[in-house]
Amino acid sequence: MAQGASILQNKMIVAGPCSAESESMLQEMAELLKSQGLHYLRSGLWKPRTRPDEFEGHGELALPWLARIQKEMGITPIVEVAHPKHVEKCFEAGIKNFWLGARTTINPFAVNEIVQSFENKAQLVFVKNPMTPDLSQWVGAIERVRKSKVQEIVAVHRGFSHFYEKKLRNDPFWEIPLELKKIFPGMKLLCDPSHIAGLRQYVPEISQMAMDLNFDGLMVEVHPSPEGALTDSKQQLNFSEFQNLLQSLQLRSSDQGPSVELEVLRKKIDEIDQRIYELVAKRLELIDQVAHHKFKNKLTSLSYERFLSSLEARKEIARKLGIDEINSEQLYRLLHSWSLEMQEKAFHLYSSQNFSEIRQ
Image (cartoon, helix red, strand yellow):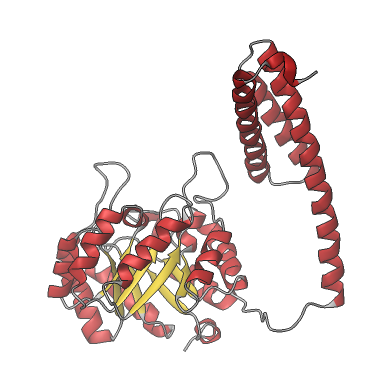
């Protein structure tokens, strides 16, 4: 067993290409997994693409490839299913381990149909989080899968979609999977760093973050030649990068209590956070005054030109302070959204009352 794999022996590592492009490619991947002491091969057969006319997988034509690898090499294939017909075809090929993707998890009708098709024969089912940051949807999908009495359910955190430019493809919102872990304490929780990252260079740091948060493992996209991959070419690791990832990950203990030095640092952070919240409170007071002025002078809550110029000014401040520009933009967008929400509430209040009496 390779050194990296031995360090992660208590973690569940699932790896493989985004799409099953050929039997030879899957064979290479299975051999790599076996050399690392790993057992789970992920591979997409039916690919739900965002836009039409893109490669959508080989479908059931690739099932014999996975079935042979399962039988001859003892590697367990994990297949994404989005329709009861997919489940039926997998069962016919002797494959009983599945994952529900984000596009499926978000739809309770689809989850119900798939769960009913398991017929108490599914062994291992991975449930990815929905595309939107909605914990209740994720919980609901897992609860529906539970009703099918599968042998084991594993939750997979792949991040959440956003509409603005960011460093990462998906927002991690780490607090959501950690909250899920509280709801289902006995269930394994994996991280899909490939979909969170969007670019392969960020996969190691996302993977390490998941280990630091005590996730139970990883589900990583790996391809022998990612640059030529038919799907998700930018976020897949090549074989060498995957091996380096396994060797570089560090598992840190959470059992030992914090040191005095760490407690001092945390205290300083708490004090800074206190000041930040006090400043936010002052900002909200000013927003209330802005809303009063705008309502009195019949101005809209949003001045788009002002927003754009303010955003650029904040990004310039971030650059000078050495703060990540994309994350600073996200922070300002959050503050601005909060500002608009407050102004609209104030407008509604002023409209429903005698405005002249409100600020005497």
